[in-house]
Image 1 (tube, rainbow, N blue to C red):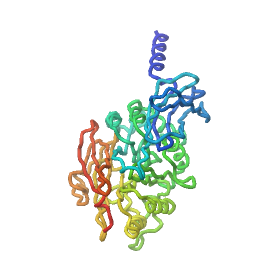
Image 2 (image 1 turned 60 degrees about the vertical axis):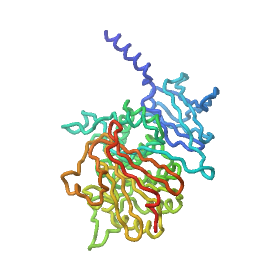
Image 3 (image 1 turned 180 degrees about the vertical axis):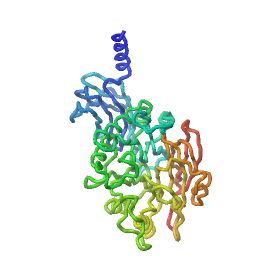
Length: 446
């Protein structure tokens, strides 16, 4: 009987393609000329090739993986080069000489610059994804919620998904070893409910504390280098910081630039005094001098209609009871002064962390207001502000507070010089819970 059950199990494994592929494929950055495809393999795999072709053609191109395989964990990436813009490609894998069941397709970006108006598009975003594992979780009600939200997101016709941090949750059992950190990323990424979304569209990510290290982790985390390497292995961003520090980078789509910030690598302890003798403590930073300098230059260089600064913590909520850029007043003031003096137009913030969603407005004298679009949680527990000092926050845009699991669809559309950005907070089933929009002309220096 045991032998029969084992044979049936092996047959199911083979039919479902899980004997060789642990997770993926996942689309990473897809550009005009190249595309990145991520996949994780079992230790038994000895060789893998990625085959691809233009949709409708017959001849496959082969791209062999030349890296090391056979480890306990084997997340790998392929970069397909020399592609044509606005072209759909199909791909498949050949593992140990045999074609795998997992296949997919992607379409490269359109070359619209100097040829046509910027294309309309939408993308998805969200933060705080917790996958329950009772043996290692804290006792009591499970913290992770309805993971079918990922199935709903996979059905969206979006250009990409932007993960805003806490994309997995390290536990106490994980904090103190590189193998523990690696295990958590591996386990959460391998969840079957996540696989359709990973394949459906490109993915970009920043981190916050829970997928960097312990709760409220900062620059003192002793495994920060190991955590950065694991993050790089499990995401497929265009770059990861500078000088082997941090994970900040930038992605562009149509006339939108997204500045993806790292709010942990250079971060001072939350316990450091915010002010000294009534003045901002210049030693306390969230992004740090290197990253701030990069952001300033990137904003100055950008010609995008909308410039979205994505970071793990809220930035403009003066009533926040949680971590926020305002708790680092030297950097907060430096950034706002820079935006004002340099007349940087089109700036919005995308943030996560709070376990509820809302849009916060921050008025500035002599120039346009700033807005912080917060989206959370995907599957983690909800943290309501109803009944707290934040409930009557005058900075919150009326009608935008969402206190259930949700994700965001951000759409950019309209003719040149009248582009509009629309935010929709959507339920586990894809139903609209709240929305807000703004025109590019409302984000311009007078």
